[in-house]
Image 1 (cartoon, one colour):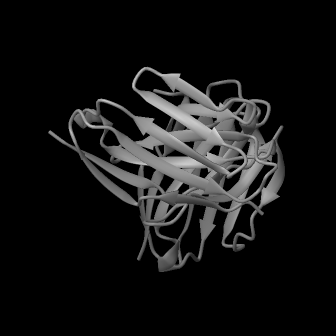
Image 2 (tube, chains in turn yellow, green; image 1 turned 120 degrees about the vertical axis):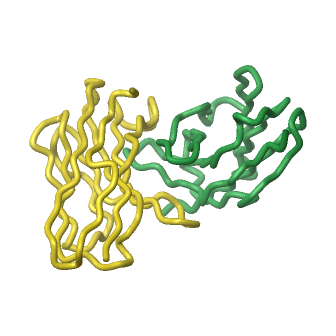
Length: 114
Length: 111
């Protein structure tokens, strides 16, 4: 286990459902990230939290809502998603800015919107 | 913003041969270039990285080279083994929190 845990591993939800993805890191890092990974596309940064404050929000639709209650936990709240939102959602963490140490990724949540 | 391009998108090599994956970037301020390996169904893992003050870095069978003038960097894997089969992502960063990733290269090592 690398120290970044994501739950659930798989999620199937209808377009009218509300669900949440959870990420927890046990590495003492102070920055956490949500990425979306779709087939044949680069990893897309969604949100960055540094010291529990959101520092990046890359034009993500409002049907995705992040929450970072403390430096160890990160959530992604989902509501009224579209089928094109189906993807692998990866959480990552880093210490003192990613450029010093790189990311540690979680295993991801495979989301299917039906 | 930064734009990272990665080639090839797929690569097949015979076991024991070398594999080379190339990335280019657009922002001359980028100064940190990690490479990630993602095996099927698993998380991306950092395998090697290079900073802009270094031209080459090697770790056993893996090496990365950086040409700042041309704005490109490459991953070299020698003596490939079946367990090297995975998707490899390059990335670039300019000291911010954000990485800009390439589209990935699916490497298959044929036994």
